[in-house]
Structure formats: C-alpha cells, structure tokens
Length: 301
Image: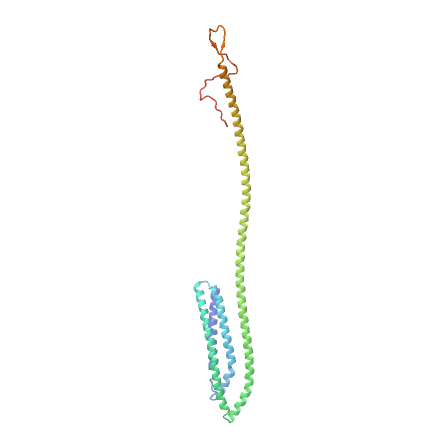
C-alpha cells in the first residue's frame, strides 16, 4: 500500500475517534448542572468533583484543535496521493471535516449557554434551600464555603494546564508544517540537481561537437587551398602549352608561304628545249602525299 494512502487512512481514523470524544464532551457540557442538589446532593457533588465545566471546556477545545490539525494534515497529504480520484475524494473529505468542525464549535457555544442556564437554575434552587433554614441548610453553607476555595484553585490549575496543552498543540502543528516544507524543498532541490546533471552532459556533448566542427573547418580550409593551387598549376600548364603550339603553327605557316613563293620562280636553262625548269630549293618543305589516317595528330593540350 502506498505510504501516503496509509497515512491518510490513519488521519481518518484519528479524526473519527477525536470527533466522537469531542462530541461526548460537548454533550457533557450541555448536561452540566442538571443534577438536582435538592434530590441527590451527594451525587451532584460527586459529579462536580469528577468533571467541572472549565475542564470539560478545555477537553472540548483540545479536541477541536486536534480535529483542525488533522484536517490540515489531510489538506497537505491530499495532493500527494497517487491517483486523481483519491486526490479529489481526500479534498472533498477535508472540506466536509472543515464544515463539521465549524458545526462542533457552534454546538460547543450552545452547550455552554445551556450549561450556564442549568447552573443558574441550580444556583437558584440552592439559594432557596440555603435560605430555608434548619440544620441541613447550615451544614450545606459550611460545605459550600470550603468547596468554593478548592474549586477556584482547581479551576485555575486546570485553566493553566489547558493553555499549556494548547500551546503544545500549536507547536506540534507548526513543527509538522515546517517538516512538510522541508520535505518539499528537498524534493525541489533533488529535481534541480537532476536537471543540472542533464544540462551538464548536454553541454559536454555540445563542447565536443564544437571541437569536431573546428577541426573540420581547418581541414576544409586546407583542402580548398590545395585545390586552388592544383587548379592554378593546371591553368598555367595549359596556357604554357597553348602558347608553344601557337608558335609552332606560326613557324609552319611561314615555312609554307616561303615554299609557295619559291615555286613560282622560273629559271631559263640553255639546251633545255625552251622549257622552264623549276629550281629546287633546299628550304622548301616537300609535299608529301600521306593519307589522312596516317598523318600525326597534335593535341593542343
């Protein structure tokens, strides 16, 4: 079973027991002073010794304070329940308890008014008995004088103890609230620590990626520079080859023009039968009838 649910069940059980005890004390307050001193004087005195009105009020106030503390604990435990339905039921029960506590406070007030009326009626009957005269009246007057001082002392001690107990209950409630606050703060700190660890690992991965990108950037720069140098060398090589081929073509064209000019010259020779003989020049390029397929090809590059 979930520990929070078990704690909620324990709070419910304590509330029910405290509620029944407080209701019993309120009923006793309401019935206080109804015992007739005239009919049963010894029974009335014994009842007053056993439970006085201040003591009953103190017990009822302690019960109400305890109920309010249990209702406060249920309010704190309700949001921590595992399911949404349990949370809603616990919150509804806490509101119902709050209404019941207010009803008990109103009942306590009405019970005190009823007890005051009972005591007034009993005092009036006692006064009538004391003023009646006789030995019984004299004996009762002496007993009342002795009991008055004892009752006042007992009431003052009971009131002091009740105030002390209320202060202790308030301190316990304050300590419980502080403890719950500390637990919530501890949970928040643990969550923040886990988030910090996650961000730390993310920052480490980001740092590694940045280092890799820097190395890749340097490598890309080197590749670009080497490629540019290779491209420049290739361009220079092509240009140099192109210039050499142009020079060779010019030389060939000049030689061809010179051969054509020498072929047109006619030299007359005696005894030649009046025929024109073309002189042969050593510098003329010979005309070769070589098929096109056998001619050497020159690549400009």
